[in-house]
Image (cartoon, rainbow, N blue to C red; front, side, top):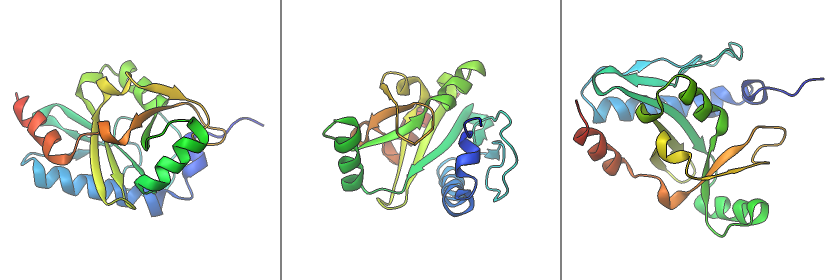
Length: 173
């Protein structure tokens, strides 16, 4: 029996976790940037599992040449800290980005235009990490049983919404 893909492992949870995060992300992008925001990801904001075909990031803002990939956590910072101490022997809470998403960005040559947006429902936060910075962090095994490696990024290093918006507006073409 072959290992399950990411989408196969999470297809039962997508409508409950992934779709609300994507709706929050879309609303935040529309409120922050007065430009067209295009849902582009394979199955973005859809409760249906539509296979594990390659995918572009979840959203694209053409005027800004900005791609956004939504991720998230259903842990509080304290729960994340506990998990990181227990499993990864690090004494700080971290958020994680799947290695495959970064690899896809490299293949599609959009690393400098992609930002990860972490929607964290238990913490009530929305945070940002440019893909180009993700690769500076450690890759870890075992974040999800049977899954691929993840970049482990300290919670403190993620950008708050205002900082991210300021960065994007400064770079506006």
